[in-house]
Length: 85
Image 1 (spheres, rainbow, N blue to C red):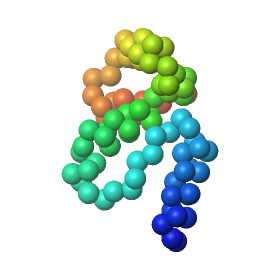
Image 2: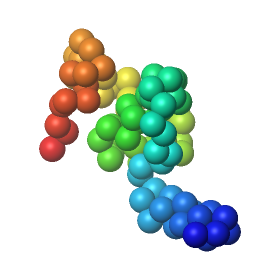
Image 3: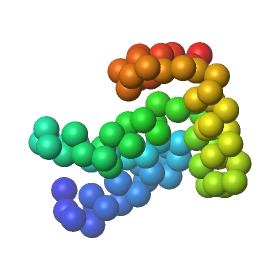
């Protein structure tokens, strides 16, 4: 696949799933322990209702604070295991 085609595929992926932030498949353990990777992973696990407010920071921050105060997670693992259905 050419470089131009790869860019097109990544662009289409972002458009078709706007509620998910893309993490590029990286095998490096150092990358997976970094702040960007962890932040994306935590954001992608948020309920869709809160993620949809991410473009409006004045609505997103209070909604996130309310969500976190209602759900007491004692570890990142507990948060990632929780199902929001």
